[in-house]
Amino acid sequence: MFGRASIQISTGKLIEFQSGDAVIGTLTQNAINAGIPQNDIIEKHITEAEFKALMPKPPAPKDYKALFGAAATAEGKISVLADALGLL
Image (cartoon, rainbow, N blue to C red):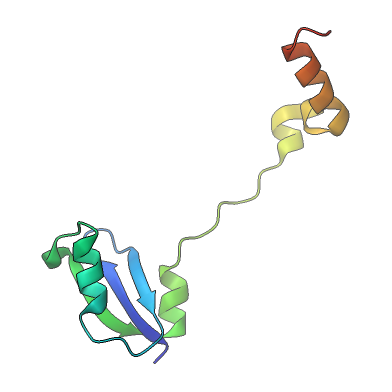
C-alpha cells in the first residue's frame, strides 16, 4: 500500500492524498468540508501506480519561437516591448 486517496466520483479526479496513518474517514470529511457532496467521494487505499495515474498531467511544452516568431528571442521581446510603449 502506498497511501490513501479521496477521489471525486463524478470527475474521477484526485481530491486529496495522505501517506500516513490518519483515521479512516479523514479524507472524506476534508472533501465534505471543501463542499463536495459525500455521495460524490470515495476514499480508498491506492498503490503508487494508481497515484501517478490520478495526478494531473503537465501541459506539453510550447514552441514559443514557432508561436511568436522573432518576439520569442530576447531582441524580439525588447522590440515588441519598445513598439508597445511607442518607442519605435
